[in-house]
Image (cartoon, rainbow, N blue to C red; front, side, top):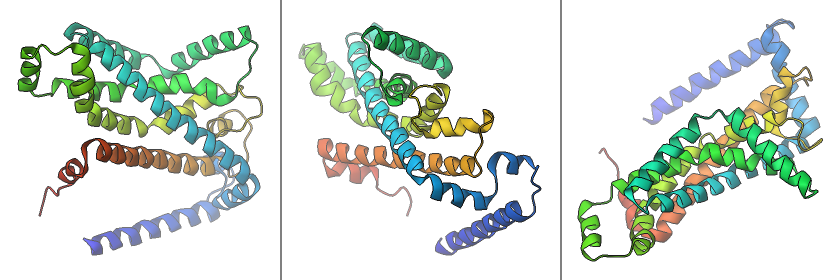
Length: 280
């Protein structure tokens, strides 16, 4: 297995180096790739000249993605508690969640921006870019944790549900003591699913509300520039790499939080059982 891994790395590195040399030396200046992405040497120049902006934009996008994930988890719990009031409510919540995901993110961003801007204007407030991103990004991310939570409820052992009926346990007690603790791993799994596109949703939202926040720099705004006529050599490939790394960062942060929460709530046994090898 190690030999196969080393061979893959060698081949991957060789191909990557060849493509970078070809891109740098062989492509014509009017080639589409060079026009929109510059050359590999431009990446280093852009990073050294704009590293503070890149860092500022990375912190902004990562912060928006993580806070939005937290808000989406809270929304999922609220809707789940509402749905657990009755079987009919649970089905209605599930349908509502599905419908919310069919609405294009452009529409969600536009409506939330208009509402927020109107409210802020009424109270004489002017907030930064991040505040306009939280609502649409959270809406885009809350579907998986809610659906996974609903699935967790439906997967609860029927004998347990029968006992709760026999004991005539109050619904509020069932939700607090049985249902929510049981479905917590499912909600966290759904949240980890959402984390895979949390940065993508953030960047799309930042790009759509391009003019908000004045001169505040963001990765999403920077990625929109190749299509707006304001292009800086090396900017696009740099931001593509940065955005990809941020996506992995957010995913691993959420995965780590999931492990810590499950250890805290359920102890080490559950984590060891989940990680037990399936082969060998």
